[in-house]
Image (cartoon, rainbow over all chains, first blue to last red; front, side, top):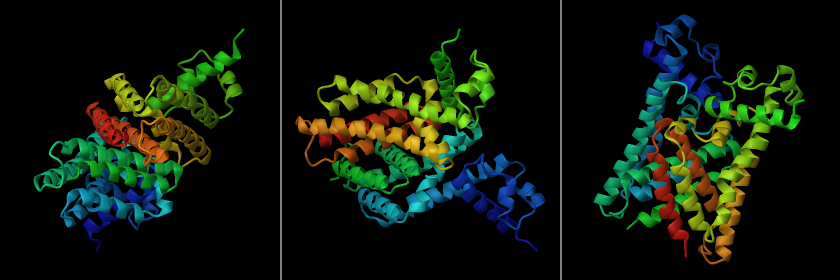
Length: 197
Length: 197
């Protein structure tokens, strides 16, 4: 007998990758089913509509990915400012060239769905806000522990780091060249150095 | 008798606004025709396919818009670094709140079309490269005339300014709040000050 939790997760994971690579509107339920062992009946049991699947991708996959990819690794660093830079470097080094064309899964869905579906927008905002707020908290810690200047604004700096990251991955999608990600790294390094103590 | 140049331009301008607000795939030729006085026959005379119209939007409308909105105004400033900041401030002040939901027309098309159509990608890259190269040229001038540190890399700084701008307008599309654009301004101001002499 099937494990219902596993079936649901299999649909979510498969759908996430297809939506990441082709966009939400360009992926059909049949496209997703053809890459799983799940029946249409089972699919609709877990996700009554394609939008319900899209919302679950944002709520579950994107939220978890943001925490795993960007936030949890920062806990390993004593100095959060250095942590952000070291970790960004690792992310760039570990991004295969062929993935550049797909951009950032969060940014893709924001650009595609935010202005046409208010529920998508609200859920995407929650992920974006989580990412910014978690970085902000690390920056506040950097201030408390004497690594960052008291005159810097943690929220504003966190927003700037996330926007530059999203802009760089969005441009890399078009240029398909990691050079643009290294420009992000070098300029953010210069910027973050000005905030450091 | 119709003026052929005006007819073509009327199609282009109408299509640009519809694509900006709804995305390329969400706009049909009929949507565009319904907002013009142009017949379907005339439309196909100027643009044999919808993609041809899309390519002309990039080559003509987006190229001109980039030069008019971002590059030509910089000529009015003696110090290009101050010029970039003053001009960014003006752009933010002049962006109506209701426009935030539409994002940046260049970024929208890159995210939607770059990975699915190589001709779109090539043309969008040309506009992005023009924007970056023109800012790079202003920064080189800033170095030659003693306004910017010789240790700074004009290309890298130009790429960073454009990526942060695109990231901010992409996020504003979701947050629908000008606050994020002011974060862009304040952080870029701090960053640019570190490059200034």
